[in-house]
Image (cartoon, rainbow, N blue to C red; front, side, top):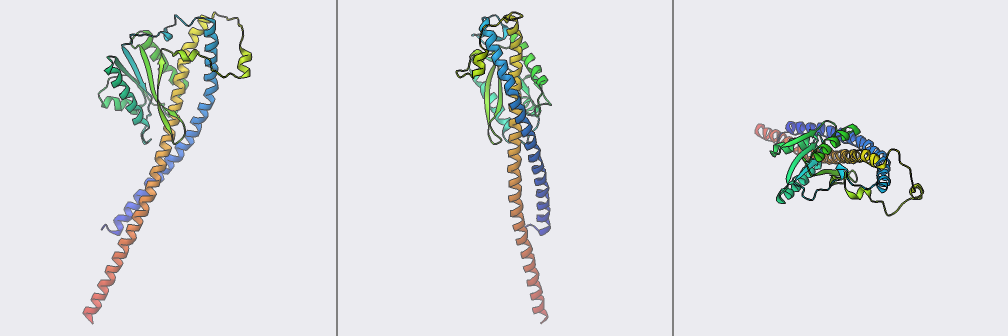
Length: 296
């Protein structure tokens, strides 16, 4: 049995660890609230962007735009996993990489080539450890992404697609459901899917009132040509915000579980220390009694 002093040192060490995990839990909770607020603030903009695309596409045939070109003989697919820059977030990073690797194997099984681009240090290091060639990596912003970060990623993906270095672009990320639940999503971003131009079945009275004939200046083709890259940037930005919120939620949950485990471990160690102390006291009493008998 370990000595009382050894157990006390283990208790102090675990208590210090518990302070760290508790602090990390509180920090992640604060960041999660801000991330959720950013998602809520982005939704009206994304919805309005989609409405503009639908209205403009109605005025012009959605043909002849490079970002809409669907290639039936797609030979190369670019996979873009969105991960975090840090760990200690449970299975947040691992489940994204697992889904991306499974997709890569499926595509290669179908005779297609795969190119890797990744956001986040964890994704970059994991893919390189698995000996994958990573064409591009964007790091040091995943816990608080800005629109400029999404724009940089979107520009690179659009460049790959328009120059036919990739015939299809897929992002893999964690969609935020709640602090306890994050689901892995696989979403095609290029070519821009046709459902982006489909109207919702249920419309509000305000949306119906806005419908009608409009005079476009400049021509609707030019407007749509400018809207498509903006829509791609918005899609990437939304996915980055979802991923950031998921990361904070996963880390908060992981640190909460770690703090709970520390408390349970400290309770067991305290019980073990009390037993060790009692055993020492009993041993001392026995020695005193044996010494008294020997003298008597």
